[in-house]
Length: 309
Length: 275
Image (cartoon, rainbow over all chains, first blue to last red; front, top):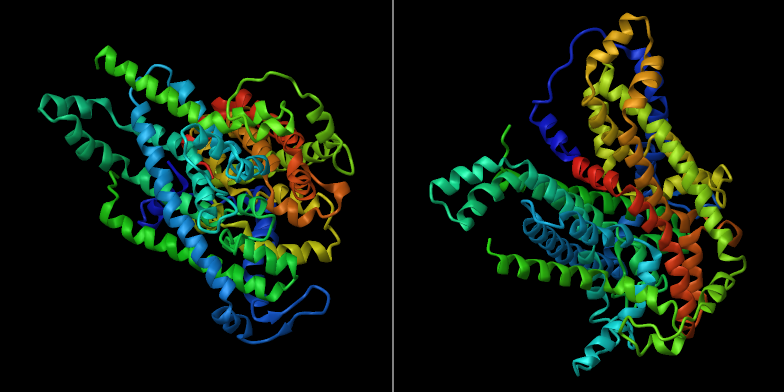
């Protein structure tokens, strides 16, 4: 059972009720660190950043209330609009591609294939390495003008280009990097496929259903909650991409802002120019956007996700 | 399936695995090549061993690279301890205790799994800079002692729920309090979940760039990701060999953790869905 599944079940009110005597004192002791974390590290700062979003604050002078200034500034901030566009393209293109690879490979690897453990490890490894600075360094080289990609293309007589220095292709190299990390959702798909009882397929085969029908009528519906889970999580995850764009562009989001992820722009405003009030407002906008995407996902789920409980 | 189709399938899978891992293999090989070759040799065959790339890279920054490795190791160790202690305590309460508002708190905890750090980093930074904690490991470690990595709380809740309740009840009849049940019975039984936590915390903290970049600006305090990034920005493109060498060094601990803890990693993301 996944965290999302748990939340959905609670929303539908089938989480099971509690009875009996409360153990509030013991619970408070065990949860004391978590409550402190909620107050100071997670929920508290969310509230604080909402308040700071209405101020002008540079860390040195005390915050000064400036009404809706930060939000009206957003409306005319063309770099912000550009960053939103870059991030949306990145999320909308890379996540479906990544999940398609993950699902495709999971289907290929399923059902007692020999060497499963080896393949699974080989495909999973990139998703452990993908967010590291080292891989971003590597990406900067392989998609450079004289990088590995162009060397390989030259072998086939194709003329390459500076993929990262060209604003038209820089973002695509980061999309490729995200697709490269399809191993983590693939492992989740594999676990989901294993939950589908083999007898469903046997029964369908006895009734004369072909492979394609089995896939459409058994695999897809029974796997749909896992697809949903991966979709929600990978979208949230993709919105947070930072390291790759930062390293590849030297922190600028270039060339011509073509890799200016939202998080990178937030970093520049907050920690480059210490414009904390505006950065707080930007952080809130990010939260609203991600929450919006997640809400739409949950809403759309009722049309395509099949629940068996 | 016929043997031919099986063979084709394996060949395709092997080819794909090779394509996927090729860039990393090529980086390892290139880290042992002279700089001039890195731009002309797409293959994996080495004719000479340019081991000095490693020496040059190791000493390219203000401190030897070992200094940054040590910083990362200290940070990782502290984060692991923090996550083990705080997340297991919270998980015990959520899995085994009944208390007012439990469903609401639990839902909030699940919600924070999906909370991006970018949303809370600004006020967090303001708080920690007022405490004068910038350029120490405290802003990176203290949150781990406060169970803020809710992913692990959830992982452990799932695990504890799978343990038979009769064990706790028998202990309670024998007069054990919750502290003793937790330490003596639950913790030893949840070692696999703790192992998963150790491995994931290790890899995520070792790789984490965003928060280390923000909180560690003094080169003395640099960890591996931040040091590696300053290396990239400081060097001209002629020293790819030594840059690759240090990239390989920085990935080595992750790779070893993967080899040792594969089983726990796969099980961890398969049961809870990963990050």
